[in-house]
Image (cartoon, rainbow, N blue to C red; front, side, top):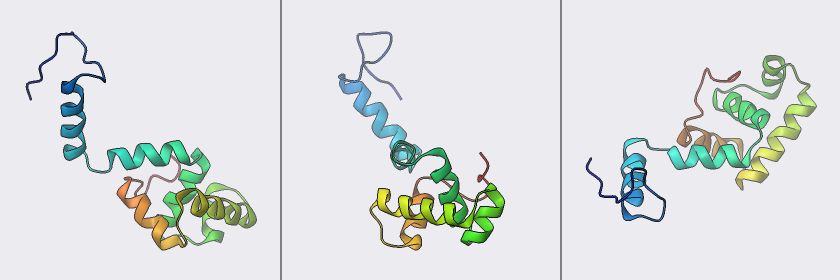
Length: 107
């Protein structure tokens, strides 16, 4: 992809920068979503969300992450609140769109 820029390194205010970002977003779907989730959720909340996306219940998540079930419930409540969703299913959709897929729980 040829981009026009007067600089050796593109600046965010240049037209070429916007073109590059658009190209990356179309090539890497979910890029913005994953950045957004990383900014909103703590690392532990991201781990819990990944586990939810894998279909684990609170007991299994607690055992996997070595935390209590009550702590898992607190994290789930925080995740739902931060994402502005009303159910685990809707949180899973957000996780999948962001690329927080299975087998990445302890990442």
